[in-house]
Length: 119
Image 1 (cartoon, rainbow, N blue to C red):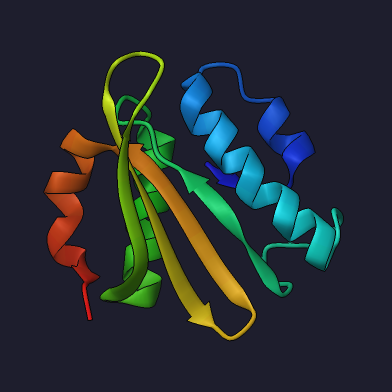
Image 2 (cartoon, helix red, strand yellow):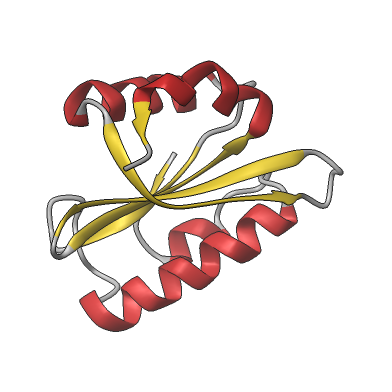
């Protein structure tokens, strides 16, 4: 799911708590610097949370990858969620003022790893 601000994140109900905490920190910065009423096309960027059991999330991930080709990963970290699963956090800067922070289970990331560049 594409998430633009903290308020939108708070409406999600089935997201791992640790994923939500990390996404909230990113969104707080985006909200502070670019405003809470920004649109997907506005400067700043968004958070993309992909759950492996959600076909809409998988579709959004595929659309993102189709649109941006091989994305250069600026930052990558794995962490353990509250559900004891391993998650990946990736930051892709698409321009000077636009970034996407992506969260997904590590098992799902392994299926898509070749779609990212590690320059």
